[in-house]
Length: 341
Image (cartoon, one colour):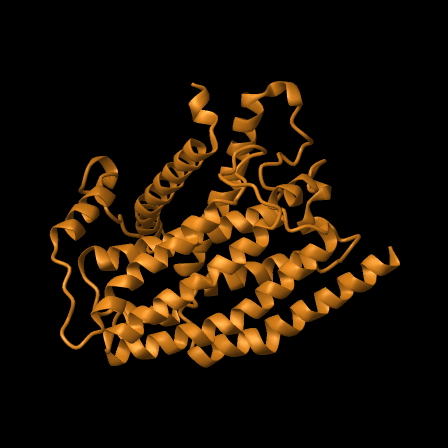
């Protein structure tokens, strides 16, 4: 079994696990969202395919696979086919450096946070390509919205991350989690002794997460009432399915990053897991990570079915006039507090 520990085999196994994790989440988070929407709106939701509707994701996948992938005339065929492939790549690459446990990380690098934001910026390019290549007026308007929305919300998100970097002094995601060990009062979210506005930075990060993932109430890129399906209007079959999967992959990635940066990652919040626990300690840490992760994902779903879609100019004003000034102030306040302390 020693060959399993060799670097190429370990990376291959990690890739397979990440793909399986993304695929299962994309399939069953759709079901969770549809079930949740039914509860919020006082209706049953999917309940016909399998017991309680648990086979609905498989039925949806079979339906998408059975349809023909059509490239409409007048589109840029190469870019049209390339966009669905590009949109999934960033999330897969970024999840490779997310530590799900002290040793459960596909590739532990000391600039993991920088890698996440570097590859994460490619996602907007893929959506922009899909809209531009479609040569459809709704898709092109959607592509323009995606770019302006991404520019507006990456600024406060990066300011929040810079604030965290000043406090932790590292881009290593594992090290950031380790610095949050020791109990609930040691979490970055509650480090009011460094910056009393740290809980506010978490709220800013979460709002930017929704905007970056094109989730309601910030789903301007696919506003059905205005743009049909936005950048995805001309896509059918698994072309549309890949974009749908990428949305949930980005939700998982964003919530995983929020868990690592603000909620202690795999830390239990009750103290460090004893080293003698071995594999049981790793599984315990993974369990705590997943509980925090899916609590955030539930909140993302909750927000979608609670708040109406905002108007586009209101979306931009929220970032430029509110989030950016507040995140700049928290950055300056952190700088002063670190210098004083």
